Amino acid sequence: MKHLKWGLLSFTSINLLLAACSNDEQKEYFIKAENETIEHIHGAGYWSKEGTPVIATHGGPFEYRDGTWYKTSRNNHDYMGFQTIKDGFYSSGHPEEGSDLKNPLGLVKSTDKGESLEKLAFYGETDFHYLGASYESGTVYTYNEAQNSKMGQGFFYSKNKGEDWTQLELNGMTSTSIGGLDIHPSKDNMIAIYGEEGVFLSKNYGKDFSLIPTKSMVTSLTFKEDSMVYSMLENDKVSLHEISLNDQKKDSSLVAPSLDKENIPIYLEVNPLKEGEMMMVTSMNDVFVSKRQEKKWNKILSKGEIK
Image (cartoon, rainbow, N blue to C red; front, side, top):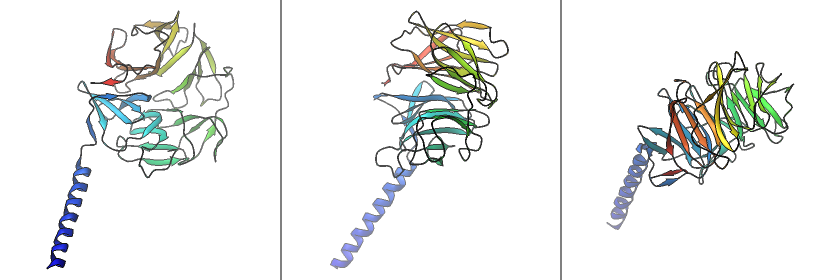
């Protein structure tokens, strides 16, 4: 009888364990975020067929829909160089604590908002802080900060998801420091690298660059189909501008949120599904969205705090 009783207890325990696992697997991947403080934002964009705003953080992606922030309930990886593309996102960074993934992640891709990751290149070897990608084609660009198994230091791009890499020649690139880079959404040959002097633009995969000078330092930039929108510090105040790609002397001013040198835009993103929609992320973890960027900006996150 003792043996039978022990066996029944074991069987019950196993059932409870299986039920717990089943419940965990059935738990919603995105859950409502409440009483959260986001300390670092490492990328932003619009993803899925709905064009939902998303930010990448130390604790995984947060998406904003119907006036509410949602966070992932698992796979809360520290994404660096996060870039949304038509069928998902590219990223680098570090796995969450307790994960069986190698650190760093190298270059990874997801087509299901991070529920699963495809390991593309340099897994367990390299953490890319600077990534850019063409939304339509998925061609990915990076600045590699240190020698790895395939690349030396410098700018590279890959048209086959990180299998092969080509180094940018950078003819005409005279800047010694950069603020960031961005890739045209449908023309993967077009890359902009921005910084103190202005915007260096290439239309041949980074072989040759021409400088579009600005009055002061460019802090963030994004492509539309026929133009670039960028933020700049003018007299310690943030201003927003749009440059035509067909006539680069045509530079028009746009309405910007009221920001200064203490809180500058670090990410600027256009919704590739609706060009009139934009998102701006600042160094103090404010997030603004606008459906008509020349008219009004709405703050959807203040100092990273989600009530």
